[in-house]
Image (cartoon, rainbow, N blue to C red; front, side, top):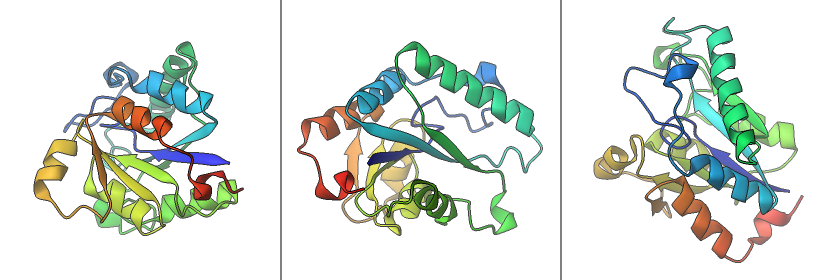
Length: 187
């Protein structure tokens, strides 16, 4: 099985320092949903792993998060894209949970759910914490410069081997033009 793990805010949709708190605020980055459709057509299962501390901060509730994700699924389906699963951490940084990126708890759960080690799986994020969570699991890190990506690049400290892209569409173009990796096709 070919699997790819995407962060949500700043990778698939526009990010906001004030958080995405309603379906109306969820706006896809141009080309991101079409990129997911191309991944699906190439046989990839697309999984989202996202920190959503707005729940812990009481900025929105689970019903609102579900409505945001319903909008994301609906808009993806309109362009022929499928997001296989969404994993999220509702905690704030102070909660010291195991699931909030950069800790790899969500990625451990993805590995368990798909009964697949994540070594060699591509992970795409716009922040250092996204890449760190994947890197410790053996994922191949990709930084997009949308969202907080440019600031993350300027701060430095990216995991070794991190590849840089303007956006998700550019990353997918490059990935699909590359020969398949043996670690991705083993299931």
